[in-house]
Image 1: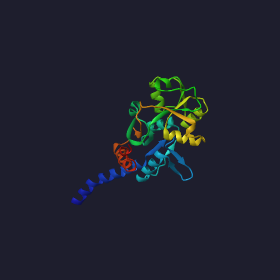
Image 2: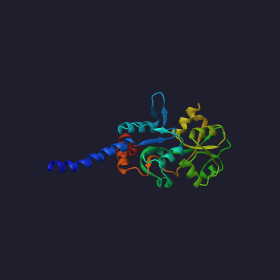
Image 3: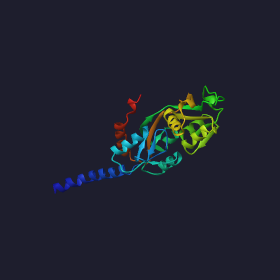
Image 4: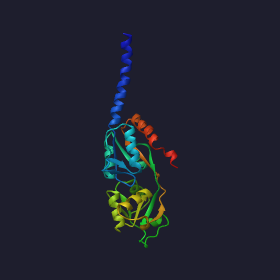
Length: 240
């Protein structure tokens, strides 16, 4: 009888471990194509600074689910709607913190306003000057939200940054807001060089960090496991 009592005590413990493993394996990562993440079809894996970090994170967690790449607004909507969804990389804003559980930093970046060097008619020394020109943004992206709050009314909205950049180099918008890494990626994609664009001013009124965030209903134990594992992949405290 003593043996049976011990067995009864241990059973819920093992059951909780199994449930934990199942929930962890059901994580579904979503993102958008960008300068820091893209899908390498030839090697069937994620590339880019953030892409490779997430790829390694998934491998260390021994997860089978692949990352799904989609337009930003849809990725954000799906994460809010679905319990097991994880979105990355995502900036932290007051509105988003009400809808998501933020976990940890996946990359650091600085955001700059850029113009085509050929556009001699564009002169920017501060954010007030930026308001005179049209600025390309992605629909529902944090840059759109923050720029609107700053009083910028001439926003050119596209569904993806790829389309946004096409509008930028085609002269359908005057200025674009990007990190330096993203700018280099889009220049390469369009057979352009850094000499064809000009960095204007840095946009500092935003959290420079990119995060991993979860659906509000995600178990905190799962988030803690991901956070601990990600620390082995990327430590933002050492990326100064």
